[in-house]
Length: 121
Image (cartoon, rainbow, N blue to C red; front, side):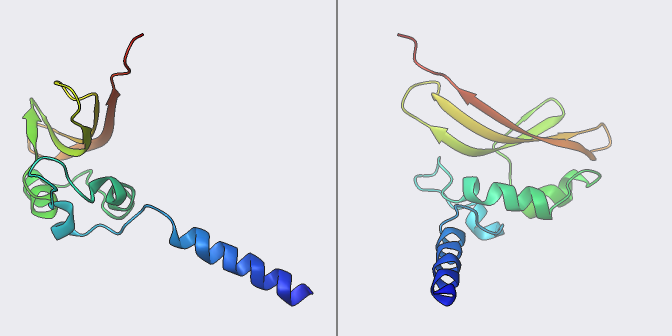
């Protein structure tokens, strides 16, 4: 009976571990889009990217070599779109990775930005 319970517990753990939505960062897949606008794999790779790549202190060139061209710049911040819900204009949901840098083009910090425009009743 003990072996059976151990087997069931191990099987349950394997199933749960296999069902996560997190992928290892892959440069090529990071850039893939469904329609030229929405990025297919970024949301699932974001946690792994931030755990395995310490951008703070990196030069901007090295960041763009790793992540490719950003979707935009705002003063001393560049950003990469992670997820969007394009049901309205502007989009009702946006998730972005902001990378802040100083005047010497060195990354000072990263930030996840999320905006969800909930519909008012």
